[in-house]
Length: 141
Image (cartoon, rainbow, N blue to C red; front, top):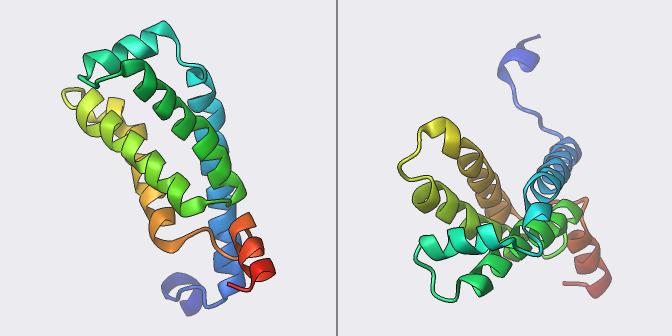
């Protein structure tokens, strides 16, 4: 009982399994709930990007949409996890601190959560159960 209440999980397989479930859920949630709506970007999304002051708003709207959709799918699979997490983090920084800078916390909350999760995977990588791990084993790197 003490271990259950006060101890951590010492099993790295369990830790990697939880990280995988979290990565897949986060990636699919971001891709299917948010990213899919932005590829290709609508005129409204391009205009919103322009209003944020980005030069070449169509380019940046496409980049944001691809990061949220393709990057999130790559995150879910665990392929190119760190670069995908980096681009997701950039998009979420813009969403949280620029787009929603004057909004109440509840409006920007999803951007903060996705940013925090992207930073976790940027730092720790994809874990044992991922395409990245499979590629590392096959390429002996």
